Length: 393
Image 1 (cartoon, helix red, strand yellow):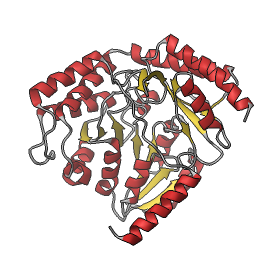
Image 2 (cartoon, rainbow, N blue to C red):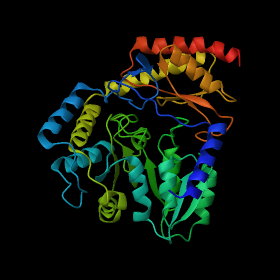
Image 3 (cartoon, helix red, strand yellow):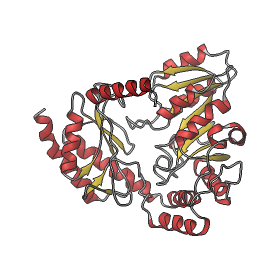
Image 4 (cartoon, helix red, strand yellow):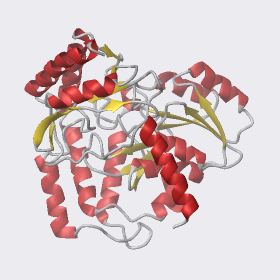
């Protein structure tokens, strides 16, 4: 290895270790669910995105096991070669039906989907306008495009309108926003954003990773939540949160999807999704559509825990999504509370700079429909006990 490169990397790692610290993966055991095994203990899991509790659903698991027996594990080829199975098309049709789009195309993850959209759809004569708090995958995807780029302050739609007016010479203007922002749990003001898109003849793209299966009467996502079905031109999402598995997608008009199939590099140059994952995802979609009580239970669980945390004096950002940010700014307060909760049987993580801005440290609590009342009560009691940590800080 090149000594100059190694010396630089070692120095940078030492600096990171001394400032923000080095991340370490948490090794868990057992299936994903409302509890997880960690270091021989069973903890209430408030750290995952298993919103509908489908990651461990018996019907989903059984469908994946059957597919593994019948179709094998992977396909060892891309979709444009010999990697496509019938289940891939069936899953794409199921996704399109779920989100109310004409068509959909699969990717290995939503990160890949977001990396593959912008270069395929935009050129140097176009403009992309992106919310400042959009997911990292959107930010990275936008960096790959030759289009002119504007970033507007989070949820500042007055600035968005000014940027739309400034970019009137663009061939295409594409507004890009998360449907639900992952750190704050707030829902994009899609009604007004859609209105601005129509007024300025701009296209609208939404990353609905934290909304697919969660928001809307049928789980179609943010657009359905606001009664805007058909109002989003490009929709990206994941199969790895509310739907419990893995993989990503882009949905929209057939012209959008067909263009991605022809020129999107992450689609063309990546192996196709493993058939057991595709079967499991399609099973999860069907469950999500036929069991609205899962969303009802998720809503009730979220409201109960939000209320319990506020009653204990915690600063909880307002909202209705099962992402519940508990704000603990300054120093190590968030880390100390997270450590106290783990000692009390609850798994959460503290978020600090650079994941969130300095001074906005927090614990991000994530609720599932699979959580029982007893598990949520245990978590609330643990949060109450952790107030003693704050009193000493």
